[in-house]
Length: 514
Image (cartoon, rainbow, N blue to C red; front, top):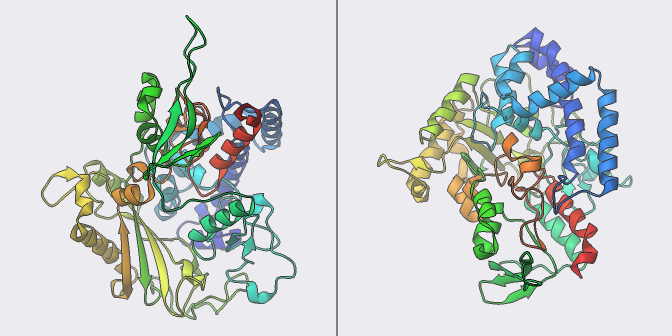
């Protein structure tokens, strides 16, 4: 399924004509609720230390008011609909619209990706909504330069150089991407980081890479007098593993709240309630990533070989491989029913790797020729559920099993076997594999618990309670120390909103940091 609603309905009608009629209504429902929540994404929670300016509150209230007035359904019903999406299991929402199990399963995966939950778990409707927030790049107003010629078209759209110089694939030059659209970054996700670095350097930043921050240096000022409340500790800088101390007026941490507040901050400078709150954050996850180099594209047996597309996609852009088909440029879901997702989750609850895990497959090299030599490809597998503390061959449940290369290799082979049920020969096409368990994600990328969102995006950990009830928002109990990563509002995803919100907060208080 993609941007063409008529084509989406035609595909869905193969399984249920009724669902094909209902699908546009479902998309419209998501769209109007995403529009309301998007207004809150760019606003800091109204809490101490992070309170929005009066103008920001006015603008957010005005925008939400206009959206509610413009809703095609009555106000009371619209508010109830949004509340249900925030709190309900995704199965409740999907069952209201659809009857086809294959369609519900395809949509339900977005409700559990990165979450230690099944589609029937409370709050997963919001996870589904979270994955369709934003408007691709359309909300950024990015467009390809008009002088850009056809030779620069790579993926059905111009690679768009944004303010930071990052090119993005799959963006129509005239329209941008719609609600819930996804895009590949040309050159891989590392190109996004590189573009941000170039922008920072151009604005005078100094970047120190390949260094380890040992701790955040903070001091507690002397009390002003007898009987007065002790002043809050103040962050002064960071100490590197080498012993060097870099001082700063303000410190922003993109690490998870647990890493920042438990491992880097002096615990003597935190009150017991704050320590307890940070320790209570839910980082449970069961995410495994497998990155592959392939010597050919997978050939799915369910595709009619006589129904082959030409060398160009629907936007008139040539594929990187003459054997590429439209489905190769999409997210490919490997054969599930709703019952399979529930069973896969129950396996993880018991500590076992899912017997039939959720598998999402993407092949970005079909769109981006910079990633692989001609005829070769890179593929990314998102696999759930792989428990952080997993049951090993010895019958013991422990994270240590993920350090066993043979154990991980065997799980990867099981994943390939499942893919082979739909794409025979897939296993023999693998040239190289990089298997990343939840423990690997934690150790290599600093993702506490392997949680890709820096903390679960469930209703109890959103907005006024993210990262904690005691210390919500982007400020911390340490003066001049802020958290700017996905662990703060509005949560995870490659969108930059947490950092932008934190930057706006720091800039609005700049006079206090002199």
